[in-house]
Image 1 (tube, helix red, strand yellow):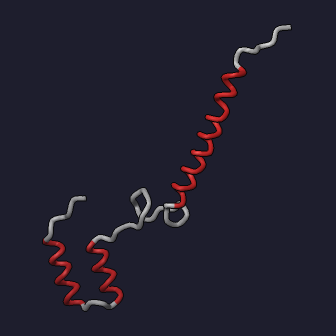
Image 2 (spheres, helix red, strand yellow; image 1 turned 90 degrees about the horizontal axis):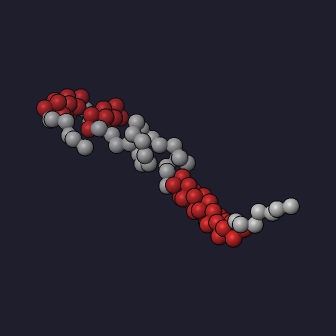
Length: 89
């Protein structure tokens, strides 16, 4: 009978590298998930970690709805925002 004995040393070199790569992948995934808010759930329409930033119009609407500003101030601010060109990101 013939036994294949040509690759034993290669496996002995390869297996520690495989385990190091596997452990590294697990650590990388754990760190990546730990840095996302909400346990991996992203907020808003854009992908990626972090909260979604409100637009100036959304901030104005929220402040008016909560009663922080009156209707005259709200109208003035809306007109001012309408005159401003949209900002580029």
